[in-house]
Amino acid sequence: MVFWILISFVALAMTTLLGLVLLRAHSVGEPPAAYDLRVYRQQLSDVDKDLLRGVINESDAQRVRTEISRRILAADAQLQKQSTGNTQPKGFSRLTVLLTAALLIGGTLATYAVLGAPGYVDMGLASRIEAADQYAQSRPNQAEAESKVPALPSPDLEPGYEELVAQLRQTAGERPDDAQGQALLAQHEANLGNFVAAYQAKENYIRIMSGDIVAQDFGEQAELMIMAAGGYVSPEAEELLDGTLTLDPRNGPARYYYGLLQGQLNRPDIAFKVWADTLRQGPKGAPWINGIEAQIAEMAFRAGVDYTPIAPPAAPGAAAPALAGPSAEDLSAAQELTVDERQEMIRGMVSRLSDRLATEGGSAPEWAQLIGALGVLGERDRAQAIYTEAKTRFSTDAEALAGLEAAAKQAGLTP
Image (cartoon, rainbow, N blue to C red; front, side, top):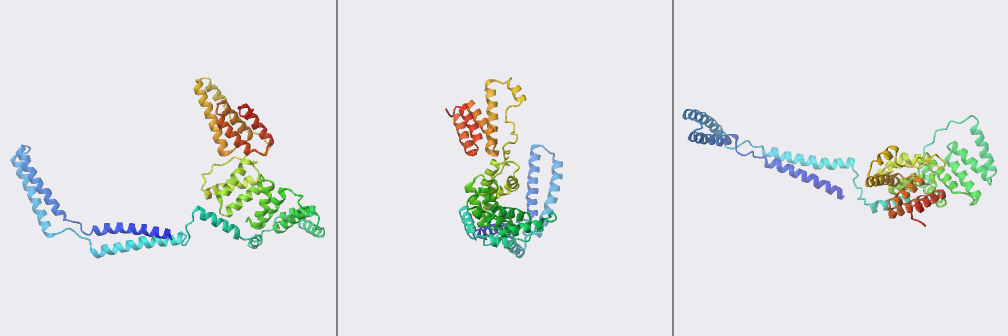
């Protein structure tokens, strides 16, 4: 309602300004002939002054007076025909003002009624968060979501595969307590696109195992339920994701689907943070990393974040990229610099490395390199802050922590 009032006042103000211009221009003022008369009389006076100064002679002055007098007579004759200047019709001016008002005010309101959101209440940050929480409590459950998913096309299968799966169903039905059979059934039902049957079999597997399971089992069931619901994360799937992340906070697929859930709950701010942290944890090329990279820019836009692409680190065991350092050209150029200039060049390299790690993330050796470089520069407080952040990022990687600790010791941060 506030927005309606605002745009109405703006349209009314514009109409008032245009109306004043039209109504004040009703009378043009004195006719052009009156102005011409004043000019010609001034010219006659100037002729007399020029004659007294000797600028022109008497014959030229007389000829100029004659010409000006002729023009004065013509202008006076024209003035007699026009007591006042041209005027605009009063009725037409008022009609124009009314039509302008109708066009601006009516057109503005009509355009907003078509393109805007009439009746939509003002939504501040607190209101949007509250609305998201309310939707989270009242959104459709798994069964409701599945009922709205259209039938999937039949996948291309090898001859006889469906018969083998049918035999597996029969065997699994005859052995309801066979965990291995339920696990196989879940896998092959998913291959056929029967995601409902697949997550039900996975649920049976978890029940049979009676707690002797890993976080991945909950995550796989959640993923099958999400696929069965056409990509929608239901409350039931959310509960499984919570269980997965409780057991394994770094589980990549669960983090991907948790971010997807927050986006569906109109909390893109949470979704972006979860996905950005997941990208920094990697590994590059993982299916969930590819999914995040394809969608995070849009999620950042919804969250109002100026997104800079994040490069996921490579998987453990992959060839590590060479650490950033001075090139051969840099080393050659450094030989010709003064001590202060060399120090400034080193600070520039360290600053670039620090900015890249802060925005894009990086490997543990790169963080260790930054800690060591800051120690050499004597910036121990900054090195300590980087060391603290790096330990948080690699808290579950014992090898990375060992490298960071060695760099901190070399920088004089630890005894």
